[in-house]
Picture 1 (spheres, helix red, strand yellow):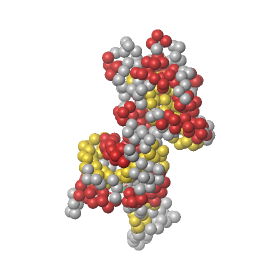
Picture 2 (tube, rainbow, N blue to C red):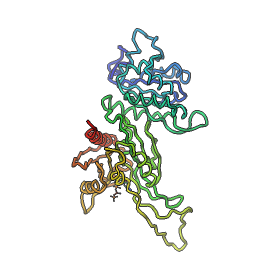
Picture 3 (cartoon, protein in one colour):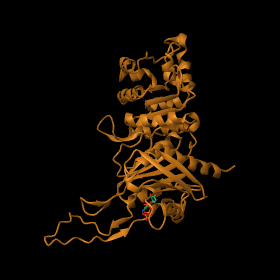
Length: 422
Ligand code: CTP
């Protein structure tokens, strides 16, 4: 908390988290106005620092009116307040959205040729870049190297979203939605600068529920919303990890900054998870894959028969992805985490069944949810017990799905650190 508003700021303003919103010169600058609103409406103190070229896209008046503060782009304005040092030093979070190829290059090389790059050099808080540019620029070797440099120094460079770009073309390079960038920033602010214990780690998270087609209009599926998987992906990103999210039929927006692979069936989920797991330090299977699929899928809709007879469904088992990943350990030292939604039955309690499943699957950790009465599915909250193959048992009290997510990453980080050489 600090006083970006200046020494005369009210005591109340000084208690609010101070965010610097850097805006570089790209067409997606208009989306940053919405991001600014999300910050101010949720009680953050925001100083907007556009680059001079950003003002070609959205003018100073918009930033000043929405932030309630004067807007500068150069170090030569209000020099008596030494803004080029004070703004960066006082920030709790700096987020640059959109971050253009030029801005990333200047930041990576430590340039200080406008106010925003000065702020980036003086900030000692977490820094988030939300790149937006054409696919060719994002894929260019120079940009790849600049992104790698910034990430290696601890900055969080979000993966751009894939979709329609400025012209008729589409590809990777879109600025993620303001709501998704905001959620990621909120996680990063909550973790603070010391909370990036997954920096340099690569993780895979699966989310949602798979669907096994029966005919062109019907499928076998389940009620998983994907919320817990999305919370895991966001939490890992905020802790510094490079995240691949394999999303099976998730109806929620993709979280900002993670690589997302969309799949439908258990077979597709398996292929995507295995491909990403070959270079992953941790794999978390939060998805609910269908355990069975129809042996045959018809190309035409199955019709009711006039005599009232009902079609017999012949099912076959789908691959058990968690068991396969746990057995094959595709990357040295990989930590594998499973989830188990249990109700308990006459063979054992929820935890008894969880322990049995942990042993059967061969994973390192099992997150056991008690789903008696339909709890958890689609809800914002969760409660769990994390069972470790090493005998540990961690209770996570009822709370938002992000609490369960961070508890899982606490356990994963502990295991990865313990296995670190030296
Ligand atoms: N899982 C998997 N592949 C499957 C089924 C489940 O990887 N085909 C994973 C889930 O993502 C989860 C864990 O295994 O992490 C446990 O899922 P669950 O449905 O509880 O386990 P099942 O093996 O299906 O056991 P059950 O007989 O209790 O349904």
